[in-house]
Image (tube, rainbow, N blue to C red; front, side):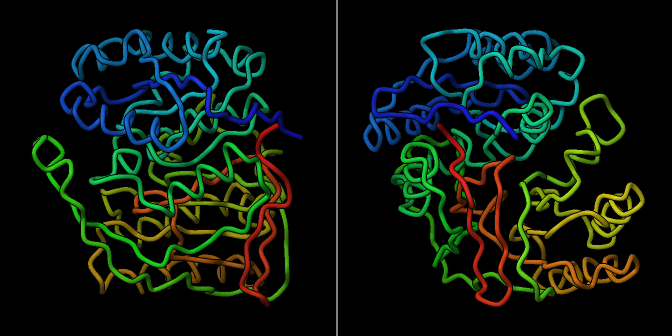
Length: 343
């Protein structure tokens, strides 16, 4: 049983944090666009964590300052939720500095993805639901305004507290527009019709609590003090994504073999895999074949597997709570939350 944070309201104040990269200081216009778009849509106000805009070099050299910002946001009674500005590649350096007792004592919504996987897992380690979802500089600063798919997910999961069916977006994009040119902030990206989710295998309806994140970041976390305890993996619905590094399909297979060697996949209830980001078209079927291959090696051809889903390094992405019960039904091809993620 995980502690659920309080839901957000139109009066909520959100702390924004840079727990890995300090890139936000180089694209402040984009950050301001996210604040404006969220404020107009939901009425939220924002407060920057004390060190979050001190620049990439300072934050790289001072992981304690980054950890202090998270602790500040948790202890500040005026703060209702916390959103990551952007990911990066070294949140793992914060592990010795994070106070899990504070996370449990002051359970608040924390949302991010990519390198924020480290922090998301520490919330689970502390027994608190966390939220795999868009960062300030990504979908929340979407060029020309919030995508309706993102807006709907934020509203329903974080504010209304609904136990929702996960939905496939009718469209998606991987187009990149130069974030560092303020003149391009209102230039909308081109979205393309979605190929929908692909149900790779599995026939029986299953349920379990959600856990996961960016598979490359989980590899950095593996074997450290921040790796989730065995009990947190048992009976779980694994939710995995790949980053813009687009690791080779074989490498993803090797990481999954590690999960098998730890007994994680043997006790999993289902595997959800996000739309691959920046992969050449011909590599995607190979990636999915590697997933099936590894599961076959360990006798898990029964495991329901859904790929090409709308979370992680894709746009638009839905908010995916970690630590809530999810039902995966291959017969009806539906995935639904069995409980609210917030109080």
